[in-house]
Length: 184
Ligand code: ADP
Image (cartoon, rainbow, N blue to C red):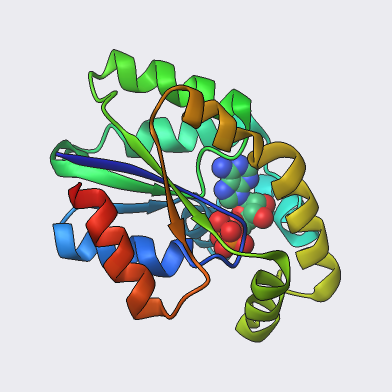
């Protein structure tokens, strides 16, 4: 059973790699960013609430994403495993997830820290051209990552769940390294 959390700065390639690995293992790829963007597009109540935060590079309030993830992990397709991409992003979310996984007896998750230097991720994000990929918003997302999300590296390292993969390689090389790390 493969249960993985992908951690790393915006632009490290989490989304791309999570999708490739999830497809190869035939397990769902759960991206909170994708779920939120879809909600936004459909202007659901969740999307309406999340919009201003996302447009500014701020985190959507914990409570909203936590409910979203809890609901998603209750779907039957997650019984075969899952990859979480973009969640947790705060220590509070991580504590919530830890408790939830214990409750549903899925607490054998491993965390992959996909690492890449700031100059590399900024260049990648500027080339991506998503609506929230303007230079100012990117800078803010990186600040938020450093202050709110990067502490999770220590958090999961202390729990001995952390594996690190170098995201500053070609897409194929990252995939190869990821597959090795996951199989080990
Ligand atoms: P990136 O590809 O830049 O890492 P994502 O697609 O994962 O970005 O997320 C886009 C935006 O969605 C974030 O900037 C944030 O506003 C919101 N978001 C996604 N996941 C979370 C989360 N776990 N907690 C709070 N906000 C989130």
